[in-house]
Length: 146
Image (tube, rainbow, N blue to C red; front, side, top):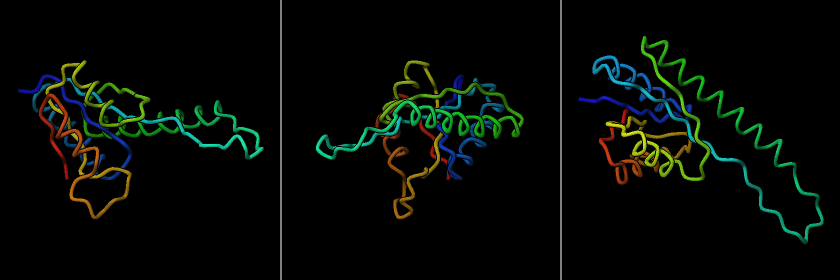
């Protein structure tokens, strides 16, 4: 039924639940599992009139990528601990939803698994903005794990 499953992982508790579920599904359906973590480089708005020297963006970008690699590694470890195997992809993009949708379409993914809410912390929302965006825009089935 599912040949390729993509799980979106951001380090949140809901993403961990989604990752364990995706690992189980990949084993059940003998599907290829891909764990994706999307991050963006930090941006700082500065006014030229401030007279302040600009920050070293190189160091901030390196730190952002290192942090993202740690998140990806934790997600892959969850999958290994579940007894499954996966490949990991780190994607730098300003839009998490767009990056996941495009990646899933390019890789011909059959199912995207995502947690209910991510790291945004908007507890009052029933679904997070990423899960809602994936449901609205993905070309394939989307499973939202709670």
